Length: 110
Image 1: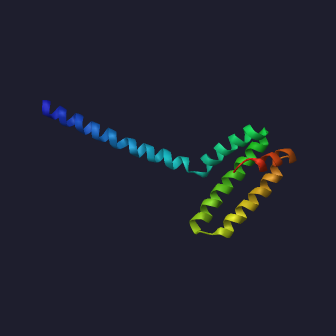
Image 2: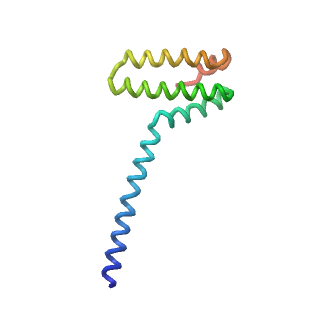
Image 3: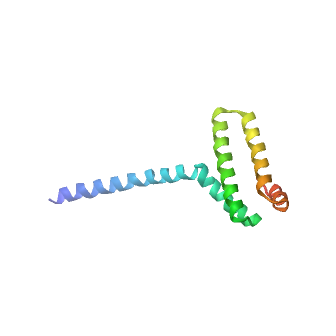
């Protein structure tokens, strides 16, 4: 009986330690998603530029689009597509932000 408890305890420990890397990997994968990246960047821009609610939503959508397109262009190793994505993003931001906010945004280190 004592032996079976030892085996059960060891098995439980082994399975417990195996679950941790799996959870850490899932967390890392979530951090790389465009939505997660965009949420963080939107919060930073909100702090720096004092965005309205509508601006926050529009900036979030623009950041998600940029992150997804950049990832896609990176997978294809397409420099022209990356440059076009950045150009489109700057134009989108210019339409979303006021002139004062846009000039502040341009001065923020990327």
